Image (cartoon, one colour):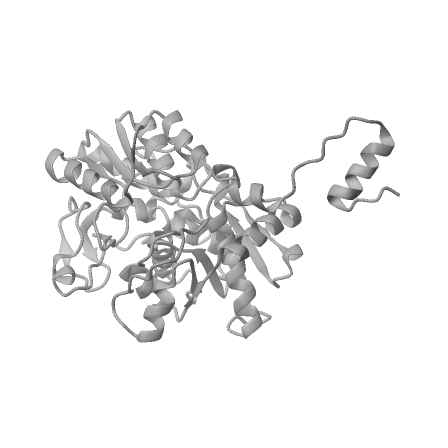
Amino acid sequence: MPVPSALVCVRCGARQPVDHYAEDCPACRTKGVPANLTVAYGQRPGEGLKRNVPSGSARSMWRWHDFLHATAEEAVTLGEGNTPLLPAPELGLGDVWIKDESRNPTWSFKDRLGSGALTMAKRFGAKVIASSSSGNAGAAAAAYAAKAGIPCIVFTFVGSAGPLVLQMRAYGAMVVTVADKADRWRLQSLGVRELGWYPTSPFFGPVVGSNPYGMEGYKTIAFEIAEAFDWQPPDWCVLPVCYGDALYGMWKGFEELKALGWIDRIPRFVAAEVSGSLPAALSSGDSMPPEVARNAPSIATSIGAAQATVQALDVLRRSRGTAVTVGDDEMRRWVVALAAKEGIWPEASSAAPFAAIERLRAEGTINPHERCVALLTASGLKDPGPIESSLPEPPLVTGGLPDLLAALKNAYGFAHG
């Protein structure tokens, strides 16, 4: 296992102590381009390993502990990771594969962040876990805090999806609801700064990203994808993006594999957004993504931020990638298509990558022969609203077989025989 030696700025490389997990880069913030920190190690992660020999025997993402910040034995784990990578030929998008993160313990990719962050919370002796979340991140923080035996406070806002809030409460989190979204950060910041709470999520603005140790868990998505394709990475990785934590973590994972010579190239990355902050920054060439206000809230609440991060923009530029702004109607259509054609029911944000691939294929940015992996981040059970609003109510049948067949035809267009 490599030992963390510092937390370094993702933009300028300035080094901070390993316990500055609640900070960003002070130099970059002074320059008006606030940037997150990422974990640096005393030795190259994976050094000395053979490519086709698993890093460890743990039945979780911690089998890659030789690339991570703790051993599998000390990890706070619920068996996250090792999610399926599935071909999706019925979608009509060409060579597209789905990395289905809804198979994680709390049904989202945030479990990798939760495990990575809570493992270090125990090491640092944290007394309280704090998260600001509309859903997935808060549920993961609550579940892994429960596993670690540490109290957890989750700040959410009026209008968050009911099933997600119930999930946080089920894991024993002390959920606090605020009327103004900004109050989540204000209250969490007071707890972190004045009471020493351990943050797993962003809690100040402009947002730079989440807990650096939590983000290390996202590297394992890249490891699993590369391994599944026999160390021949896909041409493109397409993700729903809010603050770019998974985007940065996956890119870092591929970079580490390339440094070891396990792969010969890095995939290009696509950020599927709902605000348009990253497309605007790529177009303008600015170093800081702008805030782009929406006329109405998106149905994809987990990626509903109006401003993206430096870490996300940096990955897109380094990988020669791009960003796409996706609308509600597109996401609703792909939620229905994924469920009906591939048997996978995603939450709305998880449908955004498929809308992005469709558009980029049509315009020629992604060539017909190029392989894409779409990150499906969470289950539709967490927020059933898009399905409820997209499908008709089931018919009520009170009669016999003729009435049943008539109802099937009228409601679903199904004609027997």
